[in-house]
Length: 179
Length: 328
Image (cartoon, rainbow over all chains, first blue to last red; front, top):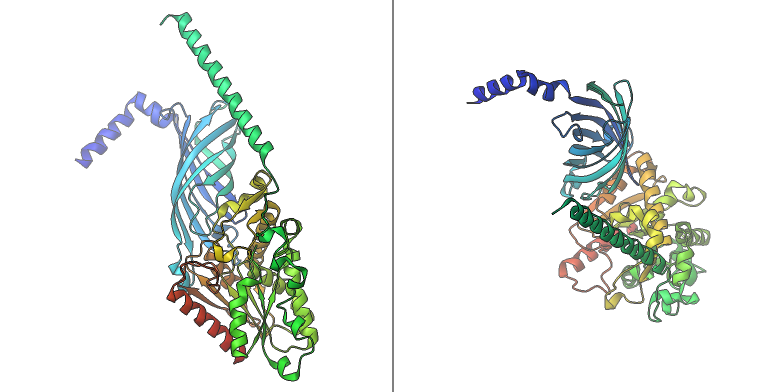
């Protein structure tokens, strides 16, 4: 059954119209993400952003990222080592322009490393849920930079704070349509 | 529906929306204008500046340097602990430890009233966290100059970051070093995370209000001016950064953190930040203990409602631990 489904999927993707929508007109941005939480840490990492014509003419973007204080404030300091695993969806405005505006929702998983067994009784894992909005600038060459601000709707455990700012620098694979 | 009717209906919808947007802006404007930066203060509130803690003579009433100003040799050998209370509180927070010390006679408790506290709403509003800290420094200097040989410090809640900052700033380098520091439910991270946005929301709020149970009335400020919330945020954020970079205790100074596991004011993660950030003079770890309590400043039970036998037992145990350390 699974083999048949995979076969059907391959067949569909090889059909010219389907291929044009799903493969030829995709954009996949991959790169680095820098995050500063208000009154807390720098948490940096990597991210990816995917869109295609079939996602409402590239108005919808799907994204995922990993950011950690290990590559930020906790790097050779006493800050808490914590990790953010995120997936999200954005709505883009002005999709044919260099300067685009976006708003979206993210969810994921947060983990803080307590390091000392004594402190493991404290809450240190959580669902992440945040709203985010910002600007993206798409260069003529396949690069983009985004600046955004977000708000975490869940703020426990202790080292999960509400307001954060992000900058992402992505290299874009696929077609990079801007006027 | 004809095309004309359709556009007519659409136009009506737009007009209606515009009208509601105007109302919306009017409400926001009225809200901003009506923000009252000064609350209505009743005479039985600490904020009025008219009750016992706010009377000038009370400021130094429980300072050891005030009532033992000509110490005998045996008094100079007796441990004395400078006890600093939390944000908006008064010396009341450490009364129970002083009562124990009076009963035991093995140590003294010097209760400092933090600067800006226990006076009036207006005096509090103008104060900075450095002002709050000043009275701890003053008492330490006086006890040191009087010749007390075994000086300890205890800080509850905001009292803790004030003491940590004294260590960080090198204050003790000019005096005999403290023998030990006890921190009870220290605040480095607040449970109320909107405090991180006080810079933005503060001017709109003006102040926040707390409901005090009967036993606590007149001992805490009821109103918290946004200016002081900003000072609190500035203090705890600076403390977090200092701990992140590492703070070393003076030589021979002991430190222990006691932290309620389910504190609804100071996030328990504060204890981890202190545990990771503070080191003894030889690079060792400080002591820390998580307490199975839901109270903020679990060592203060007076004035609370619904105190359980477990709460009393925990208070007794921690006070006994402190006494043993001071008298060993």
